[in-house]
Amino acid sequence: MKRGGKKKKLTLSEDVSSHGCQEKIEGFGRTEVIDNTLNPDFVRKYILDYFFEEKQNLRFDDFLGQVYCTLGEIVGSPASRLEKPLGGIPGKKCGTIILSAEELGNCRDYATMQFCANKLDKKDFFGKSDPFMVFYRSNEDGTFTICHKTEVVKNTLNPVWQPFSIPVRALCNGDYDRTIKVEIYDWDRDGSHDFIGEFTTSYKELCRGQSQLNIYEVRGDKTVNTLITFGVLTFLSFPVSLLLTASFLPFMCFRTQIHFTVAIDFTASNGNPSQSTSLHYMNPYQMNAYAMALKAVGEIIQDYDSDKMFPALGFGAKLPPDGRVSHEFPLNGNTENPYCNGIHGILEAYHQSLKTVQLYGPTNFAPVVNHVARYAAAFQDGSQYFVLLIITDGVISDMAQTKEAIVNAAKLPMSIIIVGVGQAEFDAMVELDGDDIRISSRGKLAERDIVQFVPFRDYMDRTGNHVLSMARLAKDVLAEIPDQLISYMKSRAIKPHPAPPPYSPGDKPQTNPV
Image (cartoon, rainbow, N blue to C red):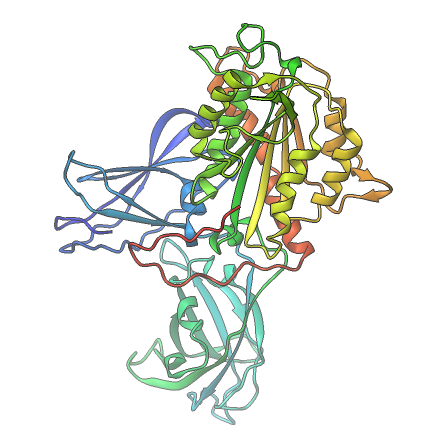
């Protein structure tokens, strides 16, 4: 963080909300004060519960100004590191705040370690020592919690302990800078083990592997001079493995890009857009169901797409000038570049399309599913994941073709969200969802469950609170996306990509075209 002033302190606040509907701002915590620097690096960290399917608003306050963002923005940024200007006095540059996030409790890394020691202190009157090591994780309150104990190596002052594997979260709970304390004892049969000495390290230091930097002096007989050395301990190896039960965040941290595409139903069953009874009616005072569904889902998922450019398609309409029927036309009218700038850009293109196309039919899903699947097929290495949102009002017309398209797409890095608007029966959509019976086509079962269907009417707030309705909808339809992404990665034995090069201010994220 680059700012002016002498004493630096930052306050974090979080929206306290019900299903994403903001009620008030609640102070969450304050950093420590750092004196006499324009570039403070705050040590204190804060643990927040993270939900992919919810919009979690955050505010960071400094005496120079404020920064607003969402937790999703931080997680979705390259290397989960977000840089934003600090807003303060209008027209004055107040510095930059750099925010980073990492998964703690659900860290799935395992480290395999081996140590040896030289010339440990002799504790037994007859014979040599029987040394063993005890590892402790430091806690936020300064206390320590035991997390591992090695075997005892009998009758030696130069022990070589067996390699052991331990979850990284057990060592440091995902905080790589957190202190790890190691104590060495001489084992006694009666349990009154003699303390030989101790040293401290961290996960970050251990990651350097076998080197001069990982040779530690064993110090600190608790009853004698702490400066006396009671041996030297050497770190032999430190391979790290990531289990295939990895959670969602490591893929976000290591540059898996989520690409969002929306497809909107323009069939005649929606009603004439110029009439108030139409599901596409553009009321100047409130959004219609299509716009609400799009905004609810899009505003959350856009945080995970670095360039905020989204393909937006329509289906079931006659297009000018020749009146041909299309089931995958770009809402912005540009077949070469169907991308819209942000969710507001999609909404503008949607409203403009209603003025230029003729609602027609039938209700075919297969073309838009195959459209996105073609792009997903080109990125099967885990670097990209594609989410298609289909908003529709009626009964599907190409059920067999759509089922085949979904079965084929289930092999790809892709998820499909279907939101039904209006009062129609959606029995066919429930079948596509596949929660009870896995969808199949021509005798072939879908490899994964990739479809989530919900009728918007089930989420409408009885008091007419549309913000609450949208938050409820988004929470339900997006809740399965992380598990679906992980299921694809596991099916292909894909681990999170290696961490990107160290970040430096001014770096621009590199994005791949959809």
